[in-house]
Length: 169
Image 1 (cartoon, one colour):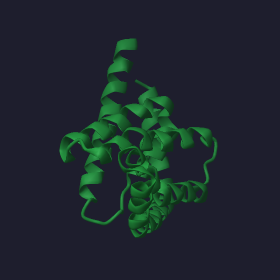
Image 2 (tube, rainbow, N blue to C red):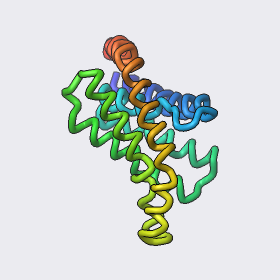
Image 3 (tube, helix red, strand yellow):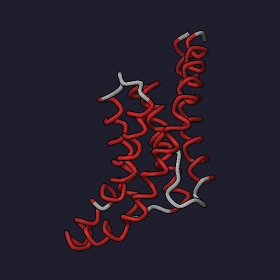
């Protein structure tokens, strides 16, 4: 029985990581419109620390697909920061709250991604890169807010049903 549950966990969590990657690729034609932040929030709410498995599957798939470069370094910590934020507020069920969190995360995504550049080129390089990306961060913020506002509740209900069925295995 324990092995069956572990196999189910591994399968489901791996598929969720693949979903993150597939959704990111599918929406990559739209500038800074993504569902990864929303899905990381949902995964974290439903799977707790196990959500780190699909998050890091996604991170490594991104590296293999796009190439491992400086941008990838921030992916090693940036999605974990969102996970930690969700864990801190995991009792909150408000769609508006999670939409604001997702929007704020999108707004500060570029700033958080500039941390490796502090070590490569110093403050001037990091600040210049961040300022240059502010228009994209704003669109990321708006896109995340709307996506979360529209999709949080349906995804939450879907995951409630799916996880309830998983418990019966």
